[in-house]
Length: 383
Image (cartoon, rainbow, N blue to C red):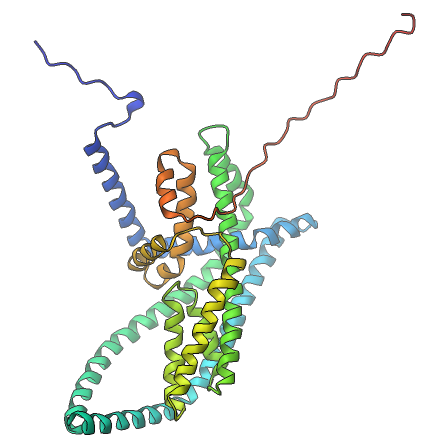
């Protein structure tokens, strides 16, 4: 007697838990491998997509005024390029002024090192010769690493400029083909409720709110930090405030990375360590106002990710894409959550990623079919 044939799963679905686990694991490994191997392409497309979502309302407003689509897309991209190179020119002028003062800062650094050596010799009976030998060894190691890092930084800078040139071009074509992409996403739906198009609309809304909020918060942090550093009498106050605002884009870690350079400058240019404590106080007050008043009002719940998911996303995307991964980790995770929220089997994962605040979503309006109102029959006067 032959053994009974196992039942065929309905609709070809795999019901064995082990087989499903293996398939999901292989899919995750394949996805991570593709994201790692083609990270430059994905970063380029992702950044261009965010800028496309940001410029889309401006492009549509120009179209409503009778401007052709190609001209509206061109003007929007030109505005993006002008803003980028304007910020780059401002930072370049500030850093050029900072570079001219590097010899003076180096002399101040050597003076501080001499004071520290004298303190260690008097406090712990470590001779300055031993300190110098140890310091020279560490400086030699640092120089070797620094040469490698300089080459990597030069290559990364060249790649960043090349990417900065390509992004407006890709943004232009994405704006030019926005109608075709909308039709494409509408045809991808598997049912009549337009789930794919709704997800894309929600991602566009999230991207616009996130990048607008980030830009507003950067301006706010730059102004407050610069004012605080000016009150402290710190040199290069505007440059240091702007640098701290740029690093503020990285959640959790960025604000304190931005505080490191001002603290070092305060220690080198001021006679008292109270100036460095003042810098830390300025950063702390700015972050308190930003985290409790500015970011909740400006960014709101556009990226409704809980703190644990945010930290895991920063670690994962940072390991995968480096510095750009740290910047893009939060919006990418927010977009993944939007996709999870639309797929019934993945909704628990979306709930696990989210917080108690519900993000603003786009609800597509279903167009009504035109119809003619039936006229009531006229009464017969003979009746």
